[in-house]
Length: 346
Image (cartoon, rainbow, N blue to C red; front, side, top):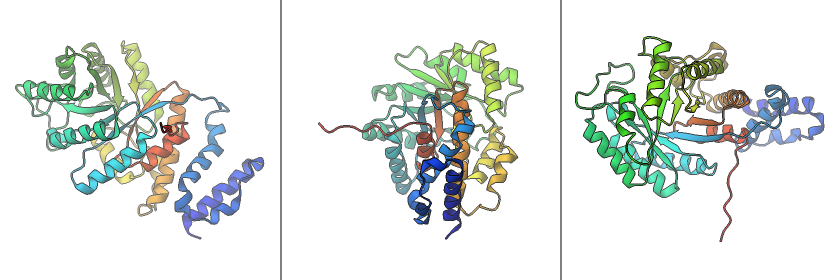
């Protein structure tokens, strides 16, 4: 028996010990783990659910949205649409598509947006940035989206062409910052504008107070809702939400959620964007750097716990950063109560 199947057997044994009346058949653990890994995730989650939610079995089911990035290859394109197709069955409120540093994926983003809308019927919210674009160029992109029936946008300052650690220089004839971009778009009909938010403070901002002031300015200039950078300590989100409310921010602040299965990548990106990965989380992945399945199980279970606590604290919507992978995002949504929507044939 391999290590993963052993862990499966162990989890089911715990199930019987904790819930002797559940009738769990231990013999199923002898079957291939790969075939039953999604069941394992849900079983392990359900065993612990009573403890996590303090006995509250009536926790409301949240809504979700997903983030994708535009692929650069045909294989990447196939992966994106396999992922998007599976997640579409969960009826997300919308999906967003990222925009590369310095607008480097402008055309791939537009292509992915169009195909996700036309082929899969998603309500798509493209990312739109200020970097290296004049106001007229930016407005032309928006008008093209409106002509396609796309009315949601994720409006961002954007990263310099040399990445998140580069030095940002506002374009001379463009929108300088996200708050300016929102103000420049608010008079266009039908637009719903999402903006970014940073529970642990944007790495380029002078203070947490200034960060909240910027969020309030975005709201005042016409933003509809904010989506946060990923975080792994819910207290950071709660404190940020409270500070924002005190400052007069009334628009929804949507938690951005990352399943940390690629812990090396998460640590690298967290350092660049000012997010914190607690050692209590990162230490769980020690010694399993080459064990993708076990990393996914640990990361998914952590994220289910994180999201359940957020729901208990009043969060009604999550934005999941999928990295164009369906498995973990689907498992998290399923554990939180979202189910596939079946369509009857005519």
